[in-house]
Amino acid sequence: MDQVTVEVRQLLDRVRENKEAHDLIYQAAVAGYWETAQEELEKKLEQVARREVPSNVLNIQYPVSHAEDYETAIVMLEMSVQDQVTLDQRSFAQLVLNKWNWTQAFLQVNTLYAMKGAQGPAGDRGLQGASPAVQKQIDAALGKFR
Image 1: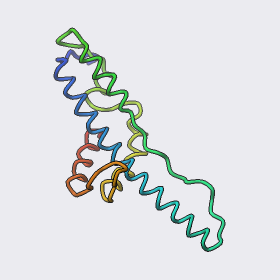
Image 2 (image 1 turned 60 degrees about the vertical axis):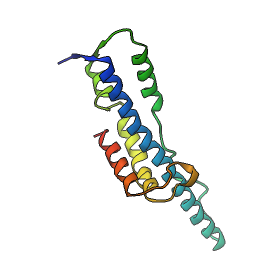
Image 3 (image 1 turned 30 degrees about the vertical axis):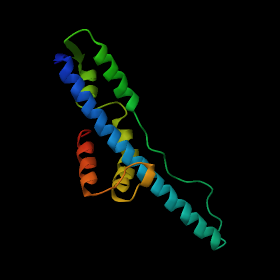
């Protein structure tokens, strides 16, 4: 099957749901990133205190957000004057199945940070009140990308 015609409202709901999953993972990843950065810097300070020369680089990557891709699709669907829209395989994979050309890189960078961010206190850096319930939400959000 090369194309499928779907209801705009149903597609809009799915894209919003996928964006919520993306945003939750990203927010948790940012919280985990800051925890990781602080840990790495503390290790470097310990090296300095021992008069060891630390490396000058934090070898961690800031989390990646692709919220704009979802926002563009949402606005396009909200502005549509049609009740139905025809999607090709690629658009269906992206908008419905949440399989974008950036999905693998997004998950590689953000998953470890997200799990860390869900486990520890995030304060004002991202997630508030990390708990087992938040961890379950993140697991469910990650499931939207598999």
